[in-house]
Length: 231
Image 1 (tube, rainbow, N blue to C red):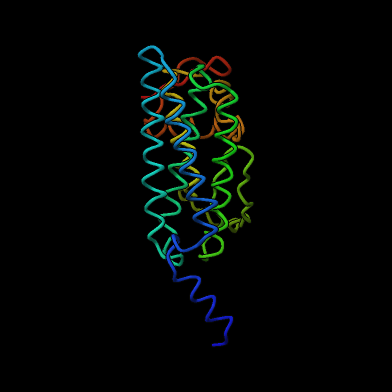
Image 2 (spheres, rainbow, N blue to C red):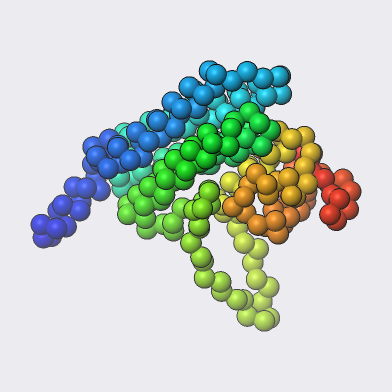
């Protein structure tokens, strides 16, 4: 093992709290996002429905704080699960902020600042996952973040292709749709895509159909007049 291998091994086994880049550009930025959310919430007043959404945002912010704090004690080569948990919590927070903005609780200016900061942290987490593990890039799309393309393999004509397994992207997308429907009561596909702007309407439609099959969502009306709500 040469000197470079020793350095790489040392870098991979140290805790993330010892990584200046991680601490400064991911942990501290995330803590800043949480602090801004709590600061803004102290200056907001609303009706019962708005208060419920605000509490959801604060709960999501607390979850982000707990998840990102947990990553600090992880060693880089063992941090995969904790980093993904932190990313999941950030995406949930992003969705709740977008919903709050859509009903006027959070201003567009504040939403823009927070979403840009969340997007930056997710990009940073993605780099650590790529650097410290052999897994694929984090399959999240928030703001303008694009998930990496995956190669498609066709099954032979005489063999039925297996049904794709549920991925982390599917789970995140379902959770975001569920949050939108929970906040709005019922919504059209356009209502949902106005909030979840990084997913196409066709993808939302497919996900809603799958959620209907799984008895998570119900539909009223037909075609363009269809409205969806939680089952």
